Length: 560
View 1 (cartoon, rainbow, N blue to C red):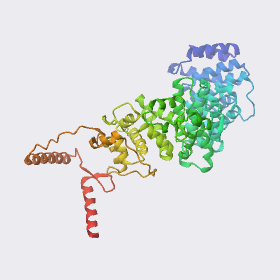
View 2 (view 1 turned 45 degrees about the horizontal axis):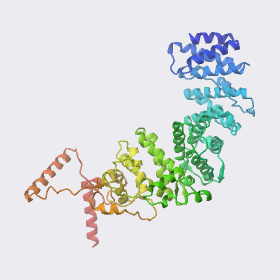
View 3 (view 1 turned 90 degrees about the horizontal axis):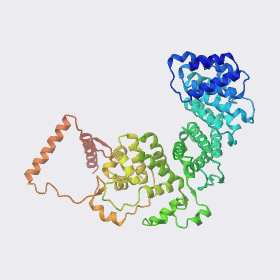
View 4 (view 1 turned 60 degrees about the horizontal axis):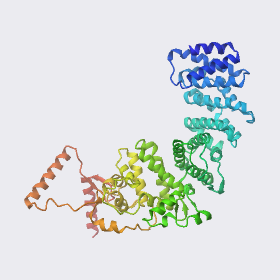
């Protein structure tokens, strides 16, 4: 009945009546996302009628009511097929100021029409393949960038920027060709970076350093939403940047990384919005070439150096009160470098671990980012090593038992999700400079076995990457406990009596043969396959491993 009454009034053509009936319809169906199939034909006709009204010279308030109803109806994919035409798309583009003209955004009264038109386009492009093809034909991405340039420095039109960016994100998500067009032809990388700068009101103190006011107000909801949409659009534009990075792009990527550093150090209007903002910043940082991530840390200014006479890395490990003071001052310092952004990433990672769900989507991006930063930048690795793997003192508990970041990461090393456990193990391995003996000290052989088997390092050694040769220093407590540490479990165990000490030789032989027969049976029934280590450290069926060692021995004998 609602559609039938609205359709009757729309066809009658009186602007005031149309506005009233459509406002009533939108108020009633504002939260409607599922529609009755019986009224599908009426909704199609209502859409067609609304487009006919939008072509006419009707008041702005009437246009807004028409567009609000069109936005609601466009949630239904089925009715979009007949109404998604080039002519109708051009009507919406005109109302959204997405034209080739140089019209400036001066008439404030038109802003609601522009916003509602962009919302309609977002729904239609997302739900209609025909609209997606027409977007390419009408060069919609270029028009959106042009509109962004018009409102780049206009803070009072954040809603227009927000939905312009959302539509740009959808287009770049649905069409890989548009990503390339945005990146190279439309200069989307500097444009979107400038949008972020504007949203964050960044004031540069150096080429890649911005002023951070820790006591300043949080971002407004509008600024936060605008920034999130820009981050998502930038992610699509830069999704393959780490593969095709050119030296000429270094400056632009460093500027973007510096903006993202600023993003990590500010907060949104709510805790949830702050987490969403930081999550999108982490995703985008994963696309930045790792060589450009050095701007995440920066040397202390003269004022900060004077303020932080005692830096965190200089404090003895028992000076917890002083460390807490440094933390409260919101300045994390290591080797004269400001590590605030890295600390935020570490806190973000721990928070995602504590959630206990959606590890692959929520945790792996930040873990991967921290791993690559640690591998490429020595100061970041050493800072994270101090935070995640401090010198061992109490080894009475297993490495996976406890509430420290190290305990949580070691638990992830045996997670059921292969991708999660691989990246968690890789992160700890890199912090240990890819040295097997150092990793085993913090995790135990059992937790690290999967990584070592995949890397061919079950026999020990180190990874392929080069790290500085500074040595780890063991605490006195660890040195005293080391002889009694179980290498498999990685914790201190009291010496256990050997059960075969009281056996006679005949009993030992009987038990040994019993074990051999059990293993032989399991092997023949293919429930268990005996494995051995090849000379290169990888595992292989036992027979093959023995054959390789025999060949090596024969070669050695021939040489002698």
